Image 1 (cartoon, rainbow over the protein chains, first blue to last red):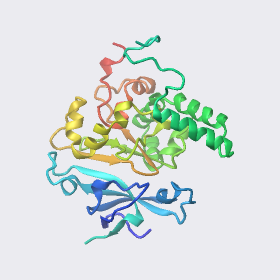
Image 2 (image 1 turned 60 degrees about the vertical axis):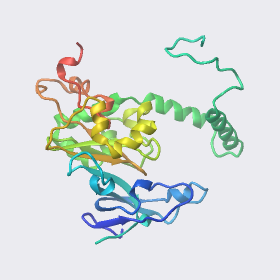
Image 3 (image 1 turned 90 degrees about the horizontal axis):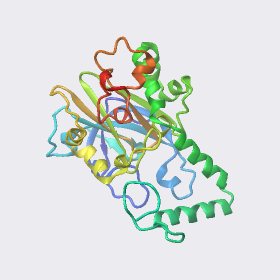
Image 4 (image 1 turned 30 degrees about the vertical axis):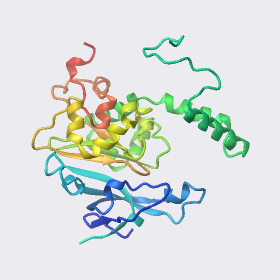
Length: 93
Length: 211
């Protein structure tokens, strides 16, 4: 587990072909690790007959809605929580 | 006009005229059975399990959490174990996370990528949960979506949308309604609707039940 709760992380902006569990709307967005779930087999390779190993840590990451949607119409405190695998995260300042 | 009894019209569905998705699933199942990966019996058992689950199972879990603070703690710590404690099979997803609505925080759940849903506790998801408009707008305009369900949050409430994109399933523990201190656990469970456990509405008011 490379990241811990409270740490700032950025979702990598790279493209991906094929089965994918990182929503496009999060690419390049920065959030805060809320919870470290556990490590799971990688669905991106499992989808094509692989064993999905090595397992990838999965994090619940919290994003301010206004960081994800610049014209977000709700409240400033509203947040979006998304499960993101470690190989899609990088450390952010 | 169909010859069976339901409330919408469509052309007759004849053998060999099935929807493309059904034909694809049938072909996949035939191949998987032929290769010995699964049996028809496995598929039938899976369908039987899914349709045997109903939101009443989730409602029992929520009602117990409302009346028993120690159970509430266990539910928040490990949803699967807490469900099993009440004899509820939480299903195949490896982790069940229960999140609690309070005076200051409201949670709602979506799966933007497909239809991840705590089927073990709520049964099959409603069609709207799987629809593109809900899946896209629940993350970008959640207060607008809630308003369409008739739910308006107070100004000082933080709205948290959970997008379940992977192996985790989320269950919302709604706020216990006012005026329910004299109700039994079973009566409380009757107030807890499927949509309240997805987080798009509040539980039913006590007067509405049995009215």
